[in-house]
Image (cartoon, rainbow, N blue to C red; front, side):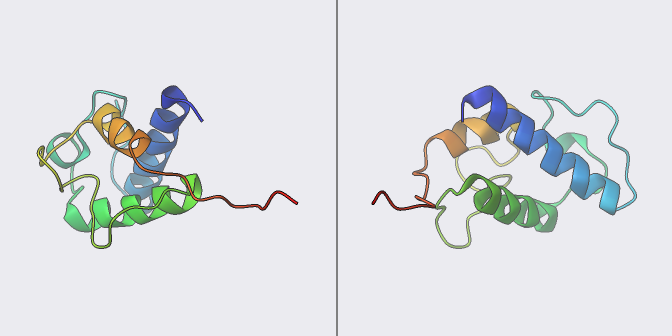
Length: 97
Protein backbone atom coordinates (compact mmCIF):
# COMPACT_ATOMS: atom_id res chain seq x y z
CA UNK A 1 0.00 0.00 0.00
CA UNK A 2 1.46 3.38 -0.95
CA UNK A 3 1.32 6.62 1.02
CA UNK A 4 -1.68 8.03 -0.88
CA UNK A 5 -3.69 4.89 -0.11
CA UNK A 6 -2.74 5.16 3.56
CA UNK A 7 -3.78 8.83 3.60
CA UNK A 8 -7.13 7.71 2.16
CA UNK A 9 -7.49 5.09 4.91
CA UNK A 10 -6.73 7.67 7.61
CA UNK A 11 -9.24 10.12 6.12
CA UNK A 12 -11.95 7.46 5.95
CA UNK A 13 -11.26 6.38 9.53
CA UNK A 14 -11.44 9.95 10.83
CA UNK A 15 -14.63 10.61 8.83
CA UNK A 16 -16.21 7.45 10.26
CA UNK A 17 -15.40 8.49 13.83
CA UNK A 18 -16.77 11.97 13.27
CA UNK A 19 -19.96 10.61 11.67
CA UNK A 20 -20.51 8.06 14.45
CA UNK A 21 -20.18 10.90 16.97
CA UNK A 22 -22.67 13.09 15.09
CA UNK A 23 -20.01 15.66 14.20
CA UNK A 24 -19.19 17.47 10.97
CA UNK A 25 -16.92 15.84 8.39
CA UNK A 26 -16.70 18.89 6.16
CA UNK A 27 -13.26 19.73 4.79
CA UNK A 28 -11.38 16.70 6.10
CA UNK A 29 -8.26 16.17 3.98
CA UNK A 30 -4.57 15.36 4.13
CA UNK A 31 -3.66 18.68 5.75
CA UNK A 32 -6.34 18.40 8.46
CA UNK A 33 -5.07 18.00 12.01
CA UNK A 34 -7.94 16.06 13.60
CA UNK A 35 -7.12 17.08 17.18
CA UNK A 36 -6.64 20.76 16.31
CA UNK A 37 -9.15 21.21 13.49
CA UNK A 38 -12.11 18.91 14.11
CA UNK A 39 -14.85 19.58 16.61
CA UNK A 40 -14.76 17.03 19.43
CA UNK A 41 -11.89 14.89 18.08
CA UNK A 42 -9.86 14.18 21.21
CA UNK A 43 -7.25 11.73 22.45
CA UNK A 44 -9.87 9.01 22.98
CA UNK A 45 -10.95 9.35 19.34
CA UNK A 46 -7.26 9.26 18.44
CA UNK A 47 -6.86 5.95 20.28
CA UNK A 48 -9.92 4.54 18.52
CA UNK A 49 -8.58 5.65 15.14
CA UNK A 50 -5.10 4.29 15.93
CA UNK A 51 -6.46 0.84 16.81
CA UNK A 52 -8.73 0.83 13.75
CA UNK A 53 -5.87 1.79 11.42
CA UNK A 54 -3.40 -0.66 12.96
CA UNK A 55 -5.91 -3.46 12.46
CA UNK A 56 -7.04 -2.53 8.96
CA UNK A 57 -3.50 -1.90 7.70
CA UNK A 58 -1.91 -4.78 9.59
CA UNK A 59 0.65 -2.50 11.25
CA UNK A 60 2.37 -3.32 14.54
CA UNK A 61 2.36 -0.20 16.73
CA UNK A 62 3.81 0.19 20.22
CA UNK A 63 1.37 -0.57 23.03
CA UNK A 64 -0.56 2.49 24.28
CA UNK A 65 0.57 4.49 21.23
CA UNK A 66 -1.74 7.14 19.83
CA UNK A 67 -0.92 8.27 16.28
CA UNK A 68 -2.84 11.49 16.83
CA UNK A 69 -1.32 12.64 20.14
CA UNK A 70 1.97 10.72 20.66
CA UNK A 71 5.39 11.59 19.37
CA UNK A 72 7.16 14.84 18.67
CA UNK A 73 4.04 16.50 17.24
CA UNK A 74 1.02 16.43 19.49
CA UNK A 75 -1.43 17.54 16.78
CA UNK A 76 -0.22 15.94 13.53
CA UNK A 77 -2.00 16.33 10.22
CA UNK A 78 -3.54 13.32 8.50
CA UNK A 79 -0.57 13.27 6.11
CA UNK A 80 1.84 13.20 9.08
CA UNK A 81 -0.14 10.32 10.60
CA UNK A 82 0.21 8.47 7.27
CA UNK A 83 3.97 9.17 7.29
CA UNK A 84 4.17 7.68 10.78
CA UNK A 85 2.24 4.59 9.67
CA UNK A 86 4.64 4.10 6.76
CA UNK A 87 7.47 3.79 9.29
CA UNK A 88 6.09 0.72 11.06
CA UNK A 89 6.39 -2.90 9.94
CA UNK A 90 3.37 -4.60 8.43
CA UNK A 91 2.31 -7.93 9.94
CA UNK A 92 2.26 -10.81 7.53
CA UNK A 93 -1.30 -11.99 7.32
CA UNK A 94 -0.50 -15.13 5.32
CA UNK A 95 2.21 -17.76 5.05
CA UNK A 96 4.19 -18.76 1.97
CA UNK A 97 4.04 -22.52 1.59
